[in-house]
Length: 449
Ligand code: GLU
Image (cartoon, rainbow, N blue to C red; front, side):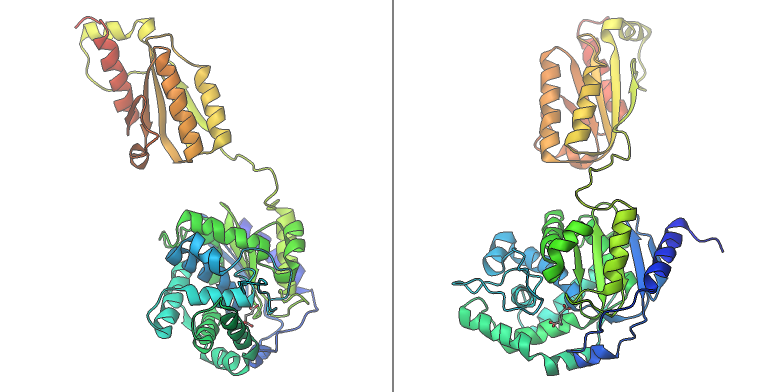
């Protein structure tokens, strides 16, 4: 069987990093100490929803702290960012995962990635009872994974029996006024959340869902709103790797989250989600092989967020200097439309219109303008997204061209038609309708009938 190039590259990475020794399997939750230190799996899910796997990528382990960003996303969805920020900060603490990281005065935990903040975040998940809260969290994590997940009851029981430090953190928060719920109940829900069973393959899909702006690339389901996905990734980038977070952003430059069972995820926005599983942990509590593999991957594929982005496709697809619609026209009309000052220029664009793409596209538009009162059709039917800023730039350009006496029609996908920015010019959903609209107006302007 011929191996695809992605699996091949992951296989080589796996082989190189497997040789790495060192680190300790977490033992403070007794059941976790039974993990096999040799287990090592890598999985990567692309934006097209393809999952590539190597090694122990189907081995089940408990999600532990990798659950934290996802539950944070749930709290953000339930309460909105302002309300959540009042209860849980978003500043890297630079401290260990189980530190007593509470803001002096308010008792607000530093961020949702350290235990105190994660416990407070779990308490924000809307529910009428602890059982309902656990169920909602499990449903939520399952939607990210694209399959029904379950709990590892033994790990849950083991953490519950040994989880006094986390209970102490919860009691401390309640005494400081930053936790309203019963500390015992909240930590129990938190232990259940940490005991959700996943594989590296599951985690890669979960990370890919964040990387795709909240859209699960495998199931096609929108799991979380775009702005929530962005906030979640931002907190992962600054606080995801505990006291190793600064160094991580320096070396790897990707939003990531690790867990004490040996799981580690990273999201490369717009590219893929990746997950690693290898139980031995470094002094910061991050998987030794996971960190090594991601560091290497980031270097080899230039994934660091601060790299200048590469524009993979050109925005302008084509320019047609004398376009005609499919409408039947009389001989006289045809003759009228063939006159040079009734020329209709079509210029097409594709992909996402961010600042750079829009600036390029509009520069191109200015270089192909017909003479007034000719028509100009901006065919944006292959455009998949327009941010508000670029949409305003586009509308301003259309208004400006109209002032110059040109007829301007814009063809876009249906959802864009409803947007407030779509005012000047004529907006339709097909290129043909846009060209026909220009033809009709040109004929009205004194052409023979
Ligand atoms: N359940 C673990 C704890 O609270 C999660 C910690 C982690 O994965 O880093 O201690």
